[in-house]
Image (tube, rainbow, N blue to C red; front, side, top):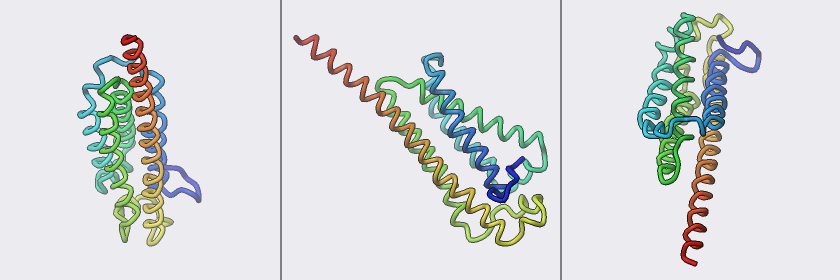
Length: 192
């Protein structure tokens, strides 16, 4: 389920899996397939944004995360649903064109802020929020080790999520500005 090493604990290993799936692989797939996506997919961006936020917060509620770690089915469902939601979210952003791109920037802002809030909650919590989860992880995960692993998981979120969301925002803005520049050039030519 989680990465087993001296560097990553169970929660930080789990969080790394989500960061790779949701913030690297899903946006890369959506970006590569952007020309094949349905032209009207972008219209579902509010739903894709809401679903992604609801799933990330819902699956990381302490009792839900504990249940997922006791069931291979639930763990698979967690990863599959988060990955599917991320594909949908990034696909809606990749399919936006023209003046619709402001919506992509807004969706990135809202989603990035709420993901960072979850990361900050994990980093600044004075104690472990996931005692039931850590009880399943064995005797090595007692006391301070729990809080350290939780803090590291949150720190990874605070670093990775804004980087991927800012990078996506820069890429979307660059494409939008390039398109606007081409329209200005076309307008200048039509005047002459």
